[in-house]
Length: 293
Image (cartoon, rainbow, N blue to C red; front, side):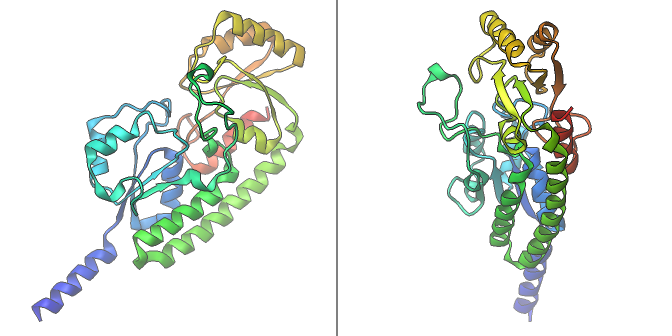
């Protein structure tokens, strides 16, 4: 009888225990919360207001990773500069690369801007392509489906709930995609300049044209020579919109705007990076609205 009672107790605990999930970025955390619902507890590792390439590996993050059942990363080497030391220090066998508790969502994304050559001479480039695909709302659906499949694998007892949550989320996001696609149609062909190649996936999805970047190369501080060349290019092409993120310096963009008559707009690069972008709907709506000003 005692053995039966113990088995019953352990079964009950497993049914009600939450799956501890860490995501590297906030947008992944929000998707996971939608799919996992009440059966998951989500920790987001990166501060959305910081540069996603360089996150300070605080001891508190190591503590979180030690207790996680699942780690979901953006991939595309976006975390390469900060995540490996944290995983090594956490020493959690569940979430090591290649294990069941590790998920890289970049595998379901067709990466763009893949370099012909990989060299420091071309700046801080990513060999697999541009890793900032979370900017494009259209990429949310395949990522959500992948996360749902992984949660079902980690926690089969609640597979039906994850599948149901996924369907509801897909309906919600498809409605948003349809709405934003329609909103952005009048802005197709619009020319823009961005500080870093952060928003290229959204530009491609909505048919906007990136004329140049304030950085001469990825991760390289803009020089006076490059800035003047960009000003002349913007004047020649009639570019009137500069896309600025929250973590790069803003002085150069303001200077270029003064010389060209362009407008600088701050775009979020992750959920919560800009006030008013704290949910997935608000985040992607803000991107579309600010691109189409």
